[in-house]
Length: 198
Image (cartoon, rainbow, N blue to C red; front, top):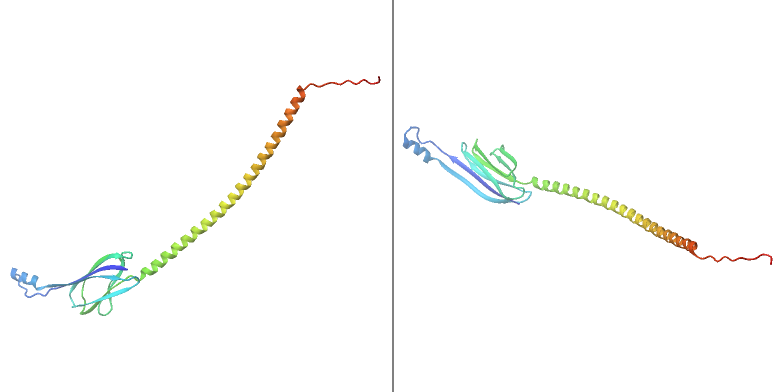
């Protein structure tokens, strides 16, 4: 939803006399009138809202608008004369001002819309969804790689543990053998002599 400020200013002046005196100049200034319409309204999402103003031919008008809050702070604006000819068209503007002189008598149409925003929001959602899917794919890939790495590490850990146990057993056997061998060098051997033939 967008909150929009809209202002149309109409300036009309008719000359009363053409003499160049100062009184005539003041009379010319005072003879003109300025009419304006101003309003602030809410434009719902994916909506179009039009306003109509009766304008006399030759009237100098200024259309001014500004998005106050909401949405992407931009709207589409279109101004059409009584025959439906587009005098002004701007897309995705946050604010703008357009001055024109009415080419003919009639009802002029001022339209504001944010109809394209829904499709932009949907396309943004689709791109976010695609990005999240690629993140999920990357996470799955890295989880598989982590599981393979963990399996290899556990297998290697088991082999190292068995190798260490085997080395410890071999070291123990070698140590016991050396102790027995060294003892045999230093032990007293009783030599027994046996006589043959007596």
